[in-house]
Length: 454
Image 1 (cartoon, rainbow, N blue to C red):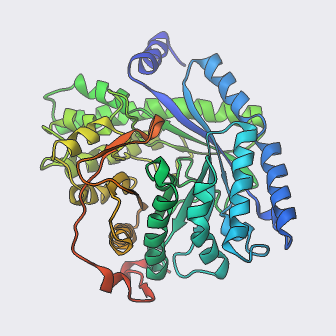
Image 2 (cartoon, rainbow, N blue to C red; image 1 turned 90 degrees about the vertical axis):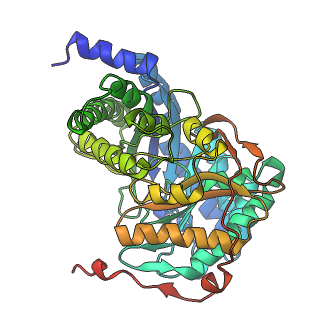
C-alpha cells in the first residue's frame, strides 16, 4: 500500500530535488526493412518508425501531466544500421541517406534523438560496417537528431584495433565536419566496449538483435534526490551511508517502473528494462560530483574519489534491482563532464584531469564522457584514448565508452557551449606524447584469459 507520506516524499523529490524520468525510449527492430534496393529500404524504415512511434511523444506528455512526473526526453533506438543497410549500401553516401531518413523520422514523430546509426565490430569489420563508420562525419553533419555508436571490443572477443584506429580518424573528421557549431557532431558519437543491447540513453542507444520487434525502455535519473538524502546523514558511518543510497535508489527506480508500465500499456508495446542511472544535468543541484563531495570529498578529483564513486555505483544498483525485476542498460553513476556543473567546476579549477577521470571509469557505468579536448589533438592520440578505455571495459567485464570532442579552433583554457542537456565544458589538456606506433599496428588485441568460461 502507498501511504500519504510516500506520496508527499515523491512530490518533494520532483519539486525540490530535480527527480525526473530522463527518457522513454522505444526500441524498434528494422531487420524486416532490409532489401537490396536502397530507396525501398529508406521507405520501409520511414514507414515502420513513424507507424510504431507515432504516439510516443503524446503518450509521454499524458503520463507526465497525469502523474506529475517530469519526462524530459522521448527517444527512439533502432537496429544497428550497418546490418540494415548491408545489402543495399555500396558506398558511404548510401549509408548517409539512411541517416537522413532516420532524422526525418525523428522530426516527424517529434522525438529529440534517434539512436542506432551504429556498427558492432568488436572482432572485425565487414565491408558494410567500415562503410558506415566512414560515413559518420557526413551523416552527423547533415542531420540534427541522429546519434551514432560503434562497439569496438568486448570481454569475449578482445579489441579490434583496426576499428579503434579508424574511429580516432572519424572523431577528428566529425569534429571538422561540424566545426561551425563547435564540433557538436562529436557529442552525438560514442565508441563502446561491451555495449549493452538495451541502453535507452543517447548517444549510445541502439536496438540489439537479441531484442523483440519493439520494446519500451525507460531511463531514470535522480542525482539531486541522492544528494538531499545524504545531507540528512552527515557524519554517519558507511553502513548508514550505504543504506541511505540504496533506499533512495529504490524509490527513484519505482517511479521509473510506474512510467514504464504505463507507457507500455498505453502504447501496446512490451516493457523492456529500467536503466537506473544517475545521469546529471548542468543545473545546480543535479550533479554526481556534488554527491561525491557530500560523501566527504573537498572536491571531486581528490584522493578517495574513485572509492566514493565505486560505493555510490554499487549501492545505486543494489537499491534499484530490488525495485524492478528488469534492470538493464548502463545502470549506475554517469560522469559526463559537460553535463555536470560540479565536474565542470572541478576541471576549471584544475582539480580534475583526464587521467583521474579514466581511473573513475573503472568503477562507474560509463567512460570518458562529454569531454572537450583541443581541436588539434591527433587522431592517433584519440585512438589511444579509446583503446585505453576499451581495455578497462574488456578486462573488467563492464561497459566503457569514449565520447570526446576535439573542438576545432579551440585549445586548453577555452570554454565550449553545447546547449541544453549537453551543457558546456572547459577544454581539457591531453597527454601530448605520441602513441602512433602503437595504434598503427594492425589486427586485434586478444580477449583476456578470464573470458574463457564455456
